[in-house]
Structure formats: C-alpha cells, structure tokens
Image 1 (cartoon, rainbow, N blue to C red):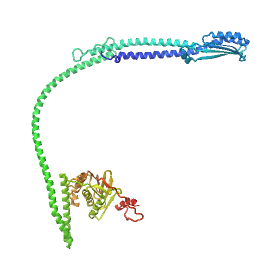
Image 2: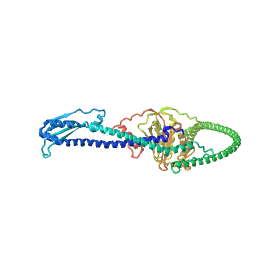
Image 3: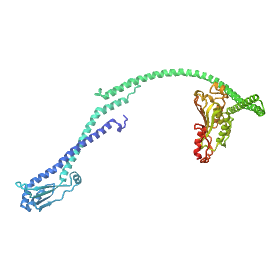
Length: 549
C-alpha cells in the first residue's frame, strides 16, 4: 500500500482522536480547577473568620483590661498561623495595645498566586463582652498572606492537569486501538485485496469480506466492489468482441475506401476539367463585359455628339419666330432630346462603375452654394402648388473637400425625383453637419413609396410600380446611380417613405471640413420677410433670425 503516511485514514483518525481527547480532558480539568479555585477562595475567608472567632473572647478581655502584655502574647500567638503576617489590637480609644508582623514568603509562583487570590487580605473583628454586646471595647486587625492558600491551590491544580492529561492519553490509546481493530485494519485488508485483483484475468473477480463485517459499511463496500468487478469483466469481454468485429469492419472499410479513392480520382479529373472550362467561360464573360462597357462608353460619346448638335439647332429654331403649333412640336423634340442626353449620361456613368473606371476629385467647394444653385436651376420643374426650400444649418462649413461634380449629381438626382413625384405641398433640401462629414436630406410630400418596393427602386431600370413609368416617366437609373455615387464616396444613402405621406432620402457623405462656417451679420430692427407659419420660409427664418439679432 503506497499511500503517504499523513494521508492514511489511520493517521487521520489518530490525529483527530488525540486532538479531541486532549481538548476534552483539558476542558474537564479546567472545569475541575475552576471549582477548586472557587472553593479555595471561599476557604480563605472561612479559616480566617474561624481564627477571629476563637480569638474574640481573649482579645475582648485584654481590651477591656487594657493589658498590653497579654495583647502582645495574643498577637504573637496569631502569627503562628501560616497565613497571618500581621496582627494588631487596639482599644476603644484607638490606642495600639499590640502590633506584630513578619515578612511574607517569596516564591517563583507568588505572582500567579497574587493574580488569582490577591496579594493580601485584611480582616478586622469588633471586640465586645458577651454580656455587654453593645459596649465597644476595641478592634482586632489581621493581615492575611494569600500565598499560603494559593500555593496549596496551585499544587492541586498541577496534579489535576497531569491527571487529566494522563486520562486523555489513556482514552486516546483505547480509542485508537478500537478504531484500528474495527475500521482501519479491515479497510487495509480490503485495499490490499483490491490492489491485487485484475478484472481482466478470469477467476480474480471476487474479494473476500473481513470476518465480522459482512453487514456493515465495509461489507457493503466489498459487495459493491465485487459487483463492479463482475461488470468490468463483462464489459471487457464485450469490448473484446466489439474489437474483433471492428477489426473485421476496418478490413472491409479499407477495401471500400480503396474503391472510393479510385472513383474520387476519376471525379477529381473530371472536376479539374470542368473548372478549367468554367475559368475559360468566366474569362470570356469578363472580356464580353469589358467589351460591353467599352461599347457603351464609345456609343454614348458617339451618340451624344450629334444629339447635342441637334439640340442646339432646335434651341436656335425656338429662338426664331415660329407658329404656335411648330413651337410646341420643337419644344417637345427639345425636351425629348434632353431626356435622351440625361439617359446617355446615366448609362455612361453606370458603365464606368461596372468597369471600375470612376475617378473622384478631392477639391474644396462651397456645398451650400452648390445646393442652392442646383435647387434654383431645378425649381422650374416644380409644380405650381409645390414650395421648394433650402434649409442649411447655421454651423454648416463654408467649404468642404470632395468631388463637386458627383455631389451635384447626387443632389440633382434626389431633388429631381422629389419634384417629379410631388404635385402639391413642400420639397425641402436640408444640409447639416455630422461627425466625420455632412448629411444631405431631401424631403417631399409626394406619393411616397411602398415598403415592399423600397429595396427594388435602387436597381437599374426599375421603378416602384408599372404605373409610375406610364404616369410620371423616367428610366429608373437615377436612384441606382445615386446609391453607387454615395458608395464610391464612402457614404450611405437611406430612405424613409410611406405611401401618401411623402419620402425622405438621406445621404451621409464623409466630406471633411475645409473652411468653417461664417457667423451671420446682425440685422437689428429690420424687416426681412413675411411668411406663412407652416411654410419652408418660416422654418428657415426661425433658424436664421436669432443669429441675425
């Protein structure tokens, strides 16, 4: 048994038994010593009081007769008591008839005795004759040294502690012997038997129970161990059978794997050939896409040149005197030509996105002025009952860094859409400063967009519904191009809309500030404008007038 000595159960039992026995014996001894201490403390007063009672009558006669010689003999006789170290006898006139004393004994245990019982105690006895108890004759004083009683108590206390310790040792030895015979020895026997058993060997799957322990915990432990041995032997036999079956299955599996490996090799060869064909097809598709992008770019340029010439000629013809019907026909042709030019520009930009050839400038420009110019230019497209308002935050930068052409294109597309689908109410263009850039927001009170169509409208050549194109016109390229431009500028385009309540498009663009905003001049006491309370001009003035004073 290779268990460390301090980890053995017998050692732990002995340690616990000794500790419990010692503590219990010590407590009992201390209780006995405490009782003895109280008895000894009371005996001091009893013995001295008894000595005073014996001396009362002789001392009373001596005080009555005022006999100093007899008083001296009496006090010297009292000093014969081991505890008395001083005796005094005085009469009723406070005259000292006798005063004798002797030095106290010194010992190494005196401090302990003085701590327990006090250094000394003083007693006094009032003297009177028996037939005249009311007549005061004098007083007998005794000073008692408690060490006489304390040394006697300490001797008994030492013997009590030694006896308690000896009893504890004897009790501990008896308990150790009982524990060893009843628990430790049978457990050691069972452990030795369990250590020598090998459940893999037949015939070694049973442990004998120590005699006399068949019905207690040790017997239960042996029965459980025997059951476990039987279970382990059965499980080992089952595992051996399973291992034999597994070996057979592995051999069969190796044959299947070999056959499948050959099939996989053939499949890999076919897959490699398919991948090569797919790569060739992908390359052909890329070449065709590049060719299509180049074709669209070239054709847009080729078509746009004669188309611009045609629009120029139509514009010149419109400036000449014409009949009303001819002017209407030429105006329709001019508007159709402008729509065609815008379509070609959008197609050219989309082809640049597909080809990855879109390049962005990074120059300072006044975005607020650019938005106002664009809104002013497009205001002629607004319906008669639509109010177009530019609301620029007071802290908006005077200039930002970015591509003014592409930003103008984003503003133009969003504002054109809003004006096209709004027949009455308001269209607001708002500029605000955000962390890391600016936010362009276009709100309208138009027809709105259903939630199911909000993701679809950003696809090229797609609108919210079939009736939209028929009623309002358009190609469905503006929003797709706008989202691509926002992504190219590392920005985001968001939409919030509800049918019948208008739409709100928000473009957050990371355009850093180049020049901070200029504080507005004060206009004290001047009339700036008159406006309805619910108009865009009223909202604009509410933000500007406090800054103007």
